[in-house]
Image 1: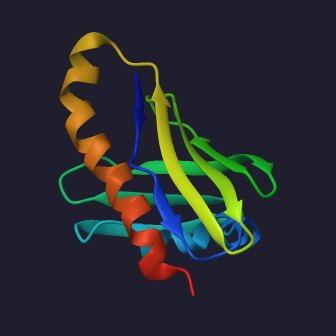
Image 2 (image 1 turned 90 degrees about the vertical axis):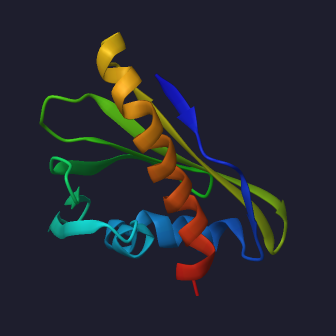
Image 3 (image 1 turned 135 degrees about the horizontal axis):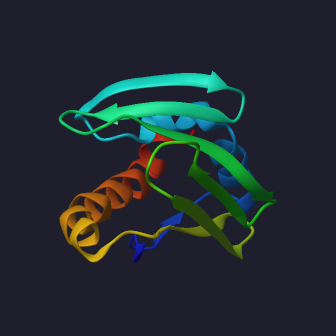
Length: 132
């Protein structure tokens, strides 16, 4: 299953956005309002839960400054990645898009497609509000 958030444009450099998203602690600020748990486990690993959903552990897997950051599931039954694609348009204008890739059986994919789409859309929408 492959899902993409809408692209957003920011009046920031690609380096500023990359630095913000590289610090996984900043993902706490991007989470939806129905977050029930967020804890930094290690420098590049965190656990979070949304109300009524199981806990998910994400770990930074790849950094390609200033264009891409890949977070992946760290343990658990679900195998997926969350990628932040950062594209510099001008010196202080950058586009960001999140993409989610996971291997799920058809029934599971059907159940989680809507919530995951909304989740990554919320994350990307909260970037301009959170980055200073």
